[in-house]
Image 1 (cartoon, rainbow, N blue to C red):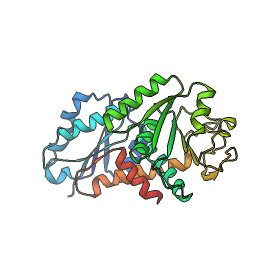
Image 2 (spheres, rainbow, N blue to C red; image 1 turned 180 degrees about the vertical axis):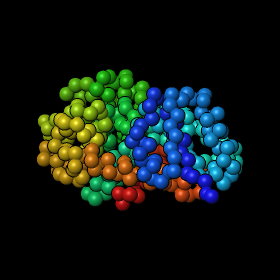
Image 3 (tube, rainbow, N blue to C red; image 1 turned 45 degrees about the vertical axis):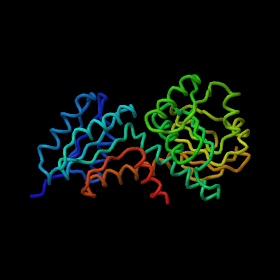
Image 4 (cartoon, rainbow, N blue to C red; image 1 turned 90 degrees about the vertical axis):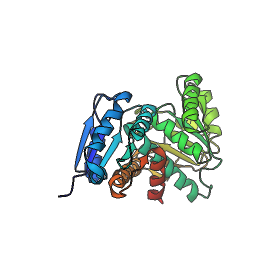
Length: 300
C-alpha cells in the first residue's frame, strides 16, 4: 500500500491558519497536522521526527509548511528545517506566513502584467511606492519589485524611522535595495505619489491611504494595486473586483487592481506550490521568490 501524503504545518502562533489547512487538503495532501506555538529551537527535533520515521520512499510523500505572522521568523524556521535534514531524508519546505508571500507575489505579478500591457516595459527602473510597506505583505511586495529592478520605497504612516528600520532589515537579510519614507501627513503622501509609477496599498483593512485629491497629483502613475477588501477603498477609485480597470481619479488614466483580482492569483499560486511539493519528487525550498515565479507564470 502506498504511503499517504503527510504535511506537517509549523507556526509560532497560538493557532494555525484554517485557510492554509484548507488549501493544503484541497491541493491533495492526505493529512495535514498543525504544530502551534513552535519556537525556533524546536524546529530541528520536529523536522527530524517527521523525516526519519518514513524511510526514503515515505519521505518523498512528506512536506513541511511554515506559517505564522512574522515573515523573518518564518524564514529562519525554514533555514533551521533545511539544516536539520540529512540526504536522502530531505523533504520540501514551503513558507507562507499569513499568506504574505503568495499575496505579495500576486500583487506584483498583476502589476507587472499591466505595465507590460501598457508597453511601459515591466518593473525595471520603475518607482514603486508601497503604503503599508512595514507589514509582511507590503515589505515582501517591495522586496520582489526591488529584486526585479525597480526602485522600491516602503511607507510608514507612523514615522520615517519605522519605515527605514524595516527597509534596512529586509536589505540586510535578503539583499534588496529598499528605502523608507514617511507617510504621516498629506504633504508627504502627495510628494511620494507625484513621483510614483506604481502604488501598492497593503495597509490595515478599512483604512484609506490615498484619496482622490492625492491621486490627482500622481502625474506619473501607471498602476495602483489595493489589497484592502474592507470599505472604504484603500486607494479611492480602485474597486475590489477591478483587474486593469482605468481609475477615474487618475490624471494619467492609470489602471487599478483590486483585492479580489489579487486574491485569485494568490489562491492559485499557493495551490500550485502546495501541489508542487509532492508532485516533483524532489525536495524544494519554496519562499516568496518561488511564489513570484509561479504567480508570474499564472498571470501570463
